Amino acid sequence: METQTWHGLAMIIGVGITVVILGLAAVVLWKIFDGTIKLDDLISEDGKASLSRFQFLIFTFVVAGVFLLLSIESGTFVDLPNNVLVLLGLSSGSYVISKGIAENASRNRDRDPEATDPRDAPRPRTRRTRS
Image 1 (tube, helix red, strand yellow):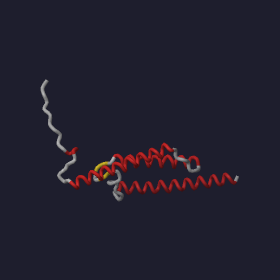
Image 2: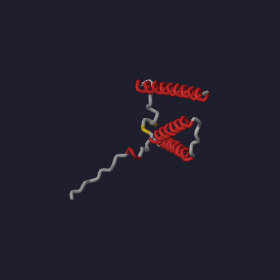
Image 3: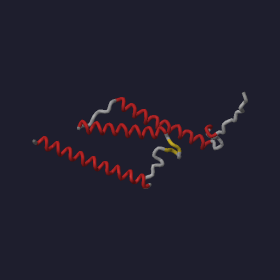
Image 4: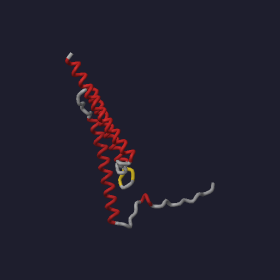
């Protein structure tokens, strides 16, 4: 009888914590849609979208969500497989490397203001020949 009481109490506490977390998530989403919380720089750098930053954000949320779900189902903390940790490490590594490349390009532009980004150069026009 006593185990059922503890099980029921754990279920009530679990539901209460879930409701609080969902309430906080709803408030954050409302503030995002309201414009109070700005997400302009969340996945962009210098006004341009950053794929590595977005990938790092998504992988982190997915791994954290799955870890939380598995921990709740089992009732204890579960061990993360090494493959998942390697995936997170690669994702964060690609983000760090892209930041280094962007910083290096920014320094080079500051040293030589006449230099332009090759992607900004006009494309050469090709003549079309009639066949």
